[in-house]
Every structure is written in C-alpha cells, then in structure tokens.
Length: 97
Image (cartoon, rainbow, N blue to C red; front, side, top):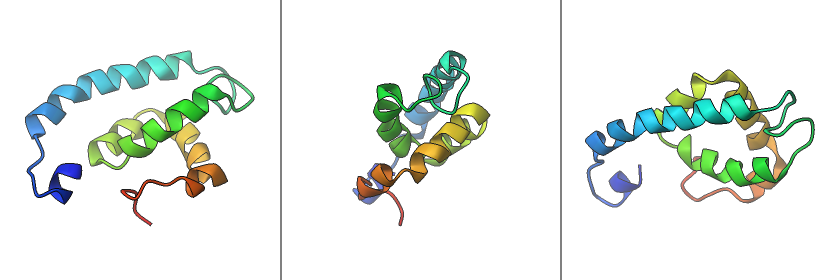
C-alpha cells in the first residue's frame, strides 16, 4: 500500500514470505485470548490498546484483512476496537474515510 503511494512496486515475494509468520502470530494471539470480549478477558487492558494500532495498519492491506477474516475471535475483537471513539480520534492518514 505504501509502496504504491510512493511510486514503487510492492514486493509481492516478500509479502508472500511473511504471511505464514503473520498467520502463526494471529493463531498464537487467538490461543492466548481469554474468555471475554477483550484480549485479556472481561475488561479492556493495555494488551488491547497496544495491539489495536498494529491491527489498524495490518487491515489496510488485503492480505491482512484476509488473514484476520480466518480468525473469528480476533476479527470480532478488532471490530469492537475499531468502533471505539479513541480509535476514530487517532486514525492514520492512510486509513480510508
């Protein structure tokens, strides 16, 4: 995404090589999720607030959206986080309106 905005071509081979590692990370994070709507349980925590900006950038890429779609608990978590007023107030200029 950034490459195209800067007049460069995305390195598709590098992206493809990173996808299995990203899948592993999402699987591990999902396995660590407690029972509750947030990453660490029933209450919003620093874990959620730290992960949210990372996810905000990850889902800008189609590959990131596709990976997240395969992890329902994380996808639902991200949907909750993305609706938070604080997320809206701190949007990246890269995010679509």
